[in-house]
Image 1 (cartoon, one colour):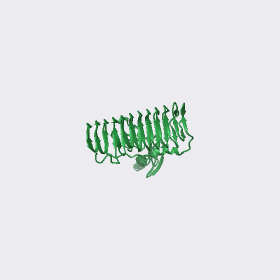
Image 2 (cartoon, helix red, strand yellow):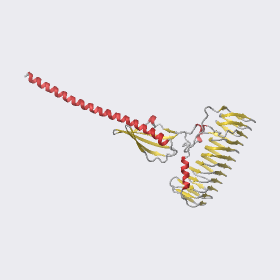
Image 3 (cartoon, helix red, strand yellow):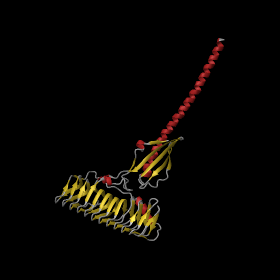
Image 4 (cartoon, one colour):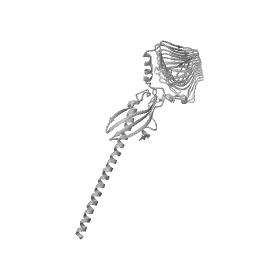
Length: 414
């Protein structure tokens, strides 16, 4: 009897340990799978981050215009792959989602990427690299408010003044009651001249090589572009003529001749004008908000021409005179910007050379590649960053930056 009972107990113990063994193996197997999935998840997250870094360096940093980022891409990268999708895109900002996939486990991160801030040269009222090595004369009651940077010799005379800032130059000479609040030599290393990538503007100028209708002469009534690109050999808008686009941004192209708007002619909001030759805004011509002009040759704005909230680019010279008003960004990388007779600027200027005189007023910041021809006759230049654009002109950014949703503080999307 005792032997039978002992046998039963022994069998029970064996069965119990067998069951415990199976349970233990099952638990260990489940924990291994969970541990493996956790590992895959970590690797997928790291892969998503690597994909974001690749996107920043290879896809965005070298592209001056992000408005065509409608499709993403995928790349294999051991131990899996990453998939990039753009869920928002504009010229200067994109929202990127990057998914890393390893062993069937995926992790997605999202970042908002913006163009970087303006280069350091735009922290001065006027910065001139002075590549020609010429002296600068500031004279006849010209007044500067804020820091001023001229890589050469500066001579201030005839009651000219620098207030609320510092003059940075190779040397400074004060004559005839001129005054300067502070002076320091050019810092070492010098503040670098910003570079400009012109790809965005060159692509727009390619519109001039496409087929066009004959000349457009519009002097009465309203012409609606209906969100389209319309090309003409030359364009003249005058008198009571008005051109608008009622269904979104549109483009007007002068393929072989000049673009002229004059005598109270008017352009509506969100229009881009591209001209293969000269562009002129004369005699109370007006443009709407978010206006862009890209011209291959000279630009003239005079006789109360009024342009605001705009971007103006040209490979030629720009002349402002007779109470012209401009608020926005001006880029003339190889040309001379000349201003006479009470012209008012508000915003950003980047040009090859500049010539300011006769009560010209500028508030914002100027960067000049070469030299300043004149700064005289009651001209005022004032540094005020509040007049600088919130979205920098294409090609002129100091780099790209990732917002707080970027890799330093990413958000995971399930």
